[in-house]
Length: 123
Picture 1 (tube, rainbow, N blue to C red):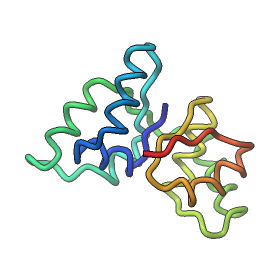
Picture 2: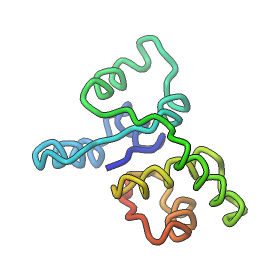
Picture 3: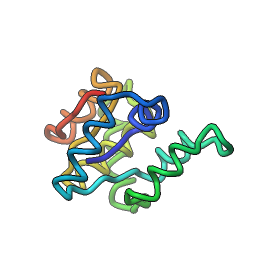
Picture 4: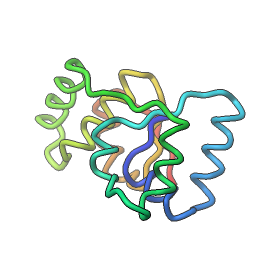
């Protein structure tokens, strides 16, 4: 699964839903991925992000690849209300064939539809 910024914030705040999803993914040995743009958006350093630092040791941080960036740009042209980071995150989920864990299903749905139906999981 791909985690967006809302999912990382939910984890930092100790929300049960994201904890359960992460436990299930670990049990199933499913990949857990954080795109680099999400890390940049969520990371603030210091004690405030201590829980996040712990999570990052257990996940794969996915760099932004050229093809993902180009597809995100195309999505921005097609989905007028989309933001750059959201478009990159959904493009990454599509490229990796993984569901996207998000706190913003409504906004992400338009992008997911653009990419042909990336699965969304709400936290």
